[in-house]
Amino acid sequence: MNNLDYGIIGNCRSAALVSKTGSIDWCCLPEFDSSSVFAKILDENIGGHFGINVASDYTITQSYLKGTAILVTSFSNGKDAFDILDFMPRYHKMSGGYQSPPEIIRYIKYQKGRPKFSVEYNPKLEYALGETNTFVKPEFIVSLTDKEKFDTIFMYTSLDKEAVVNGDIIELKENAYFLLGYNEKIFQPDVQKAYVEYERTKVYWLNWMDNTPAYERYNDEICRSAITLKLLTYDKTGAVLAAATTSLPETIGEVRNWDYRFCWIRDASMVIKVVSHLGHKKIAKRYLQFIIDLIPDKDEKLQIMYGINKEKKLTEETLDHLSGYKNSKPVRIGNAAYEQRQNDIYGILMDVIHQQLVNFRTDIENGEEIWTITKGIVWVVNRHWQEADKGIWEFRTEERHFTFSKVLCWVAIDKAIKVAELLGKNNKLNQWIHLEKTIREDIMTNAWNEKVQAFTQSYGSEDLDASVLLMEPYGFIEANNPKYVNTVKAIERELSNDGLLYRYKNKDDFGLPSSSFTICTFWFINSLYKIGEEQKAITLFDKLLSYSNHLGLFSEDIDFETKRLLGNFPQAYSHLALIETAINLSSVTAEEKVIGNMRENHDDKKINDR
Image (cartoon, rainbow, N blue to C red; front, side):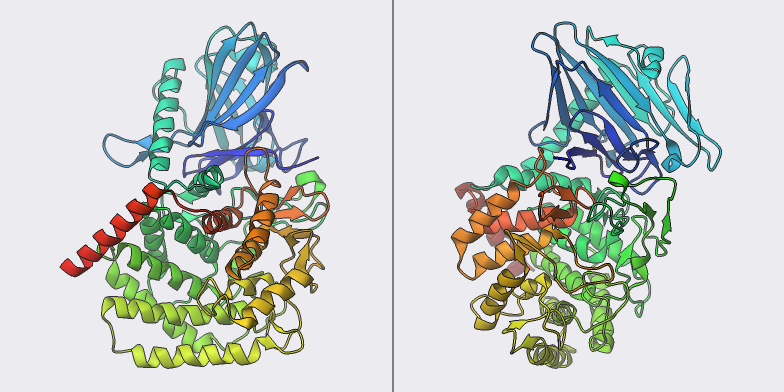
């Protein structure tokens, strides 16, 4: 079956996708949202890639080095064998901060025999817009384009450079390396230096994972998803990407192809909530600073998304020269959705702000700015909660009174009240409590449909929507409330297809979706667990996990029929929901329970001291 059989490597500055046969088919340098160096995933003919070819008698296997983002592709025919260890360097610098250069190291580890391979080194700079020429120099291989735009990429290797460029057969007799870098190196790399970078990067990831709790069930899946989410964070600003790719289609041959290399406030806030629950405080702090930096004016409304370097204008254009993934055009860069109004983002952001104050309230930075943002969010919600919007699914035409948007407006006020109480700011509480009750009553009156016996997608609609399942996790309604139970059951009847969920079934701007939005199935499984159907939840969860690729990674969507992965990859939404669901269905280890209790007692002591 055709599938997104890729591993992701990265260093919180950029990322690359490596196929199960060891070909780098997607990479943008120097940063996540830069133009591509390799884009075979978007055009098999002209996109460019960095492949390793071996004879047909070789078996190729692939896995991550446990607890790291280092990808190991192994080649063996029984008597001859070697491994390629792919990674992007990341480690602590002696002077502070992180070393995260815009480069990929492919460390080639000789195992036995006389293994032979050839290299397909075919970079196509600037999304393959113009011709890329490659030249062998004494110290490196350089590729450049200067027609549409000027750009260069440098490749260093211990192997014969002419043989690499020409695709000649190479016999491996010892360890070797490739270093692909955006910048020309000042000091010449060598095999030993590449190995040191490997060890430093390995230690970094092992230390990072050592700060993540262990769980009795699904621990490997939680750990791989946590590393994947970390790889989608951008250290420079604190932004969190929705995915590492652009234009991988929700359905083969259709036009639902979007650029996800941006920071959606909704997706990012959900990621931060999950990752900080796992104890990674620095990510949360950097993200809150990202938000603070974005909102300099008290009356400035939040956009639904921003560039990873805080850009506010994300002009969408198409790259018509690229054929698209499996010939699914168009290929888009930029995203016009930045202009949409989606009222739910305020509640999701307030939820993560409240969580950070609860978790780290004796160590919170920028408290005054956060309080200012809280007041500003309440002001915006008070003025706009009664208005229609585009909704969580970003309908590009019609605006409606979406239930999820209304619920998250309620969440914004509910969490703002709790933040005010935590900070001892009581002068606005009565106004806010009145607003919270008003929104709640409006939702209970208008979102419930007596005929359907469920909360529906929008006011006055009979259509069901998976997003309303989040009414319970966000605290709007209890799981044992008959109206919530009935909604879960109705959604199961109408939106479930062989255990996978539609987001909704009513036709949108592009017709009826033919693939399942993966996060919705995780939401549904969580809801089943919450209403007491634990065994069904576990069965469906195990089944859903079996649809991941060979490395346990998920994209945005799953095809209902073939179960192939579709949509941008890897998808932060899918992996944050996997973690939430796995934690709900798991039990933390006895040791983690003790640590958790110690943390709570320590936090309580610090609060009392304060």
